[in-house]
Amino acid sequence: MQAAKLKENETTAKGKKVKQPLRPRAEYMDQLKKDLATYYGYNDFMLDTLLGMFSVPEAIACIEANELKRPITLRTNTLKTRRRELAAALINRGVNLDPIGKWSKVDPAHDICQLSPLSLNV
Image (tube, one colour):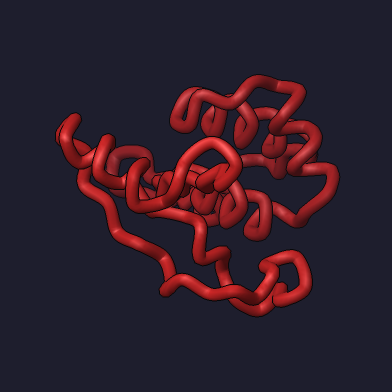
């Protein structure tokens, strides 16, 4: 997307290719930050941080990954309610639920490979 814009150093004017003088990398980076801020709505601090930590393609991949919608997961406090009761109350309010796993007596804190059986995807 923007990487092609960074590499561009020729333009066409009246059908002829005209070489432009090479600009410093700082100017390209400033233009890239402005474009990313406009397109994604990130502030300058966040873009400076991401571009400082990652290369340009990695930073753009990170920003695009942050734009994906994440699933909402609720965890049931079994001291206050049971998962079935919470699920029934939410379904009565029109919420679509998907149980994450079957009920298990294994403590999720000791079994880190599986998702908690006390959770619901909304």
